[in-house]
Amino acid sequence: MNQYFIDVIKNHYFDFSGRATRTQFWMFALINFIVGLVLGFVCSMFLKEKTASIIGTIYWLALLLPCLGIAARRLRDGGFTPWLLLIGLIPFIGWIILLILCIMPSK
Image (cartoon, rainbow, N blue to C red):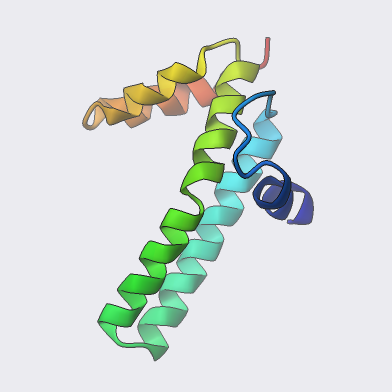
C-alpha cells in the first residue's frame, strides 16, 4: 500500500510527467476504490447524510490530481499522449476507451 498509494500522493501529487507501470496504476486504482468504499461505509453508518457527503466530496477532490497524474503517466507509458484523458469527457464511451488504453502494454 505504501509503494502504490501513499507514494503517489506524497511524491507525485502534481506530477504529470514520467511514466507509470500497469501495476502502479492498477494498484493505485484498487487501493483508492477500497479506501473510498470503506470511507463511504463508515461515514454512512456513523454520520449524518450531509456530513458523509461532505467528507466524500473532500476525499474525491483531494485525490483528483493524483488520479489524473497517474492516468497521464500511464498513458505516456503506453505510448499515448496524456491529452487522451480528455476522451473521458465523452459520455458513456469515453471511460471505456480510457480503460482500454490503460490496459495496453508499455511501449
